[in-house]
Amino acid sequence: MIPQQIIKKSALAILFIFTVLFLSACWDREEVNDLALVTATGIDKKANNKIELSVLVFIPKGGGSQQSMDINSSGNSSNVLVRSAEGTTIADAMSKLQEKLPRTIFWGDSEVFIFNEALAKDGIRDHIDFIMRHPQLRERGEIFVSKQKAKDILELMPPLERDLSEVLNELVQHKVGMDVTTKKLAQMLISDSGDCALPWIKILPPEKGKKQEQTIAYITGTAIFKKDKMVGVIDSSVTRGVLWLRDEIRLAIVTINPPHTEGYISVNLTQASSKLMPKIKNGKWKITLQAESNSDIVQNTTKLDVSNPEVGKMIEKQVNKAIENRMRLALKHVQKDMKADVFGFAEAFHRKYPDRWNKEKNHWDKIFPNVEVSFQIKSKIRRQGMSS
Figure 1 (cartoon, rainbow, N blue to C red):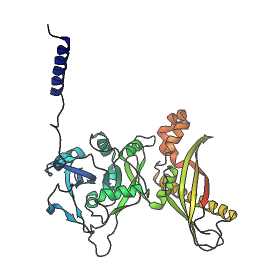
Figure 2 (figure 1 turned 90 degrees about the vertical axis):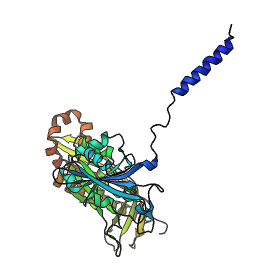
Figure 3 (figure 1 turned 180 degrees about the horizontal axis):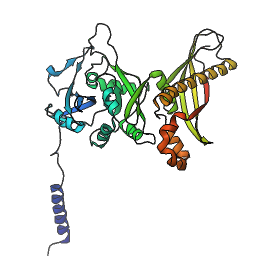
Figure 4 (figure 1 turned 30 degrees about the vertical axis):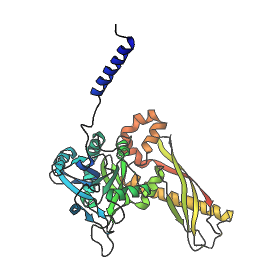
């Protein structure tokens, strides 16, 4: 009779053998040298209802021939290239683009998506829907609208950064304008108003003596969309007001000219927040914008003693007025002229008056331009600088 201990050991050995048979291996692995890593994507409108899909491909060091590397103005090798293909849809253009590249296109590193102005005016909903559905494309990818062709922007050779995708990502981090990811844009498009706003970029003219492509694209304002179609552009100054109304203001310098004195005082906003307070009374739809900010004085070219409490209160009032003027300017251009609710007014009314909203939501396009907006702004000067 076989001892019980030997039976147990034999059963354990058989179990290990069967386990090894079912272990997965690296049969489906893909080497980096076999991939074309896309870091930025551009979409332009073409004739006959077609689009042109352009990609900025990063070639890892050692992954390409030395002849394929360009030399930028800093003297550094730039392992990037741009390829394009036309199609009736993004998916169609993707398949044709793959035919032009010997490596498998990998979309998981695409951090930037650029829509040309002409395409944006026709509508971007279908394109955003595709990006959201594709398993590789990032929901966190930053979205931009360009004045020039998206392909021309991708072909720029930035003096400081590796490629254009890094330039735009750095600019977004600086909070100089709107910061809109694919996911955030999709949420705007299915919001109560359906209106949205995207950062507007243009090619910065190159320095004297430099080649036409030796420059960058930079954020110069905001493209305003009614539903999914672009209806206009606002500049950087008006954009600051939009950011206040959306509670997205993070960094700002406010410069005031105090009354009865020569010179200027500039304050740096260190903390800022805003809140929309909706109210419906006697058939009138109203919004009160409550905003608070803390600031530091960073420059004083006047003869005022900013350490004087009375002078400090005067500066705070002037800062309040400057912030309100920026928001009023944004309301004039976007609410009155373009009639696009990119501020979130619809969501604010929906949250507070759900029953009333369900009855009136189909008339929001007529209600929104007539919403009365008032302001409650409180600014606090925290520090006066290192010297008096």
